[in-house]
Image (cartoon, rainbow, N blue to C red; front, top):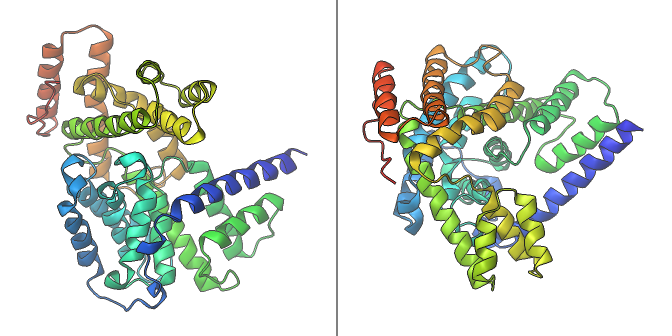
Length: 390
């Protein structure tokens, strides 16, 4: 009975996600090349992926992208290459161009930040926009239809709205398919979902299944590297992350105001931190579904009152999101992440924990900043350009 309930819940979830995705995709279909299936091989695909990202620096939104830009993409690409190479050397992923495809996905995983998302924001639906950017430029990248689906599945691994458990459950089913093991009822539901995600693949072909497994590992790699704090100047760049949050908050507030939300209701929404509560509040006030969803999105943005507080609240992000996700993907546990990256991540955690503990203890901001800079110097990290005047 419990298994049937799980199947029904999962089926319902898949339907809701698919329906929402289809509605959003309709607005972007004109950007897709119909001949993406016949992309030619290109030996310089990683360089082209870089250039495709750099081209976006000319877009109107580029000035607002302070964190999820070139430096973040480059760090993730280097991390992805190192981990993917180790996975390949251990024989865990046996697919042509596996490492190269993971690196391409890393370079372009945040391309959507430069393409105006829902409500005129940077972050909302950016993973989806990144996927469309890959498909739109598949010819330049030399990606055939299978490679596009692999790269886009990897990019989806960075979407925090996709639970790590779902990614790992899918991976388990892929492993069963490769090993020829019998699938239970829940596995069959997951297989049907995978067939939809990898529609260009033959699930009776072992080589195709190996490619799908490689894409699954790519999703874990990007999902780990994207949020693991492996950037040497991560703490120093949190001010940029906060600036992006502010941009999205302003865009959503403007949308809500233009949609007829009263100034009093908007003020009330700004004081609600629970997305469900914000959604229900607007529905009860008589606003339509689109407005309620925008309010829900607004409540999701973790904008702190200052950059120093934003650094401190990163501790909560680690506790509630990063730690469980990384533990589920098990790349670190399985020795697939280089020691140097683990060292950088550990130092970044120490820095944010310092700020958090000092704020909790009521220490003066100037003293916190002095101690933060001192500890960063001890770690060999230069965050002297940290902007915390706001």
